[in-house]
Image 1: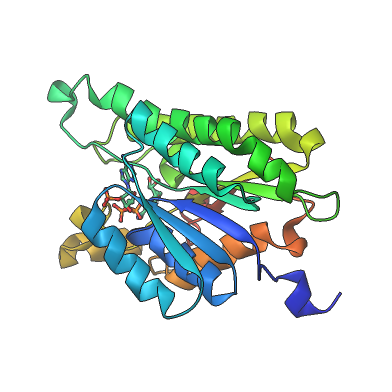
Image 2 (image 1 turned 180 degrees about the vertical axis):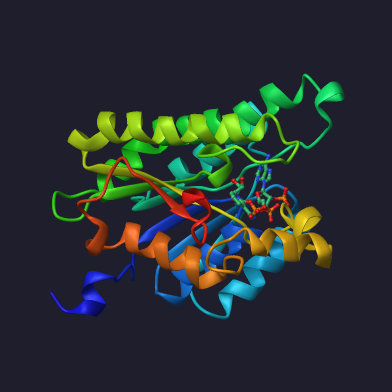
Length: 259
Ligand SMILES: NC(=O)c1ccc[n+]([C@@H]2O[C@H](COP(=O)([O-])OP(=O)(O)OC[C@H]3O[C@@H](n4cnc5c(N)ncnc54)[C@H](OP(=O)(O)O)[C@@H]3O)[C@@H](O)[C@H]2O)c1
């Protein structure tokens, strides 16, 4: 197989949650430019529409506005896709949130909020969208679920986002159990565990130059992540080249995970 076909995703239908900014938008741009047909999901209408407009210059994209932090929002997204009745080749569970607060006053309600959006919603979408994914799946080119975890789910850090790391560790473990469950149905399930990438979520850490420099000093490759890093790995996992990879959690962190 020639290299273009090996890493190709042209014509595949890809759904990316939380794609109005940050890592989701980076992946959406990579997939659109590679010829995939991409649906981006976001909570707030304005940034979602801005992202859709920016992406449509490069190819096929549509936007679905919904709040995945509510049961109604999850149901609405699933209903929209069911109505379209099109096969789904790739589901990227990227929408996520973090809550930072001092240990002594860490809010109780951060726990159910993070466990719901970061862990339960990826499960619910996998469960409810499975019939559409099975229609896209074949033995030689299975459908794919990519969960966006975090290096915070692999190792501890000094940040005060106490519920975040445990939620991402749970998502990594969910990835493994879904990979096992869905392999016979020709669905591959993998997680990407990013380190530091510029985004709204990481802005509190990276916007301050002194803090940013300290963070970069703790990254063996000496830089933060870029769009091509995350889109390249997501496209690999979605392509023929990634067709024998399932149940993995791949650190994408410039080497932070080995420190
Ligand atoms: N940036 C990093 O360094 C880093 C590192 C490791 C892991 N991650 C993970 O990467 C993923 C993306 O984060 P990011 O850093 O790119 O943050 P971001 O720029 O804040 O993007 C988050 C995206 O998720 C959407 N979203 C949040 N809550 C939602 C909800 N309830 N319903 C629907 N959409 C929702 C946001 O839409 P709205 O703006 O409309 O809310 C936005 O599109 C997260 O899972 C995060 O944990 C990020």
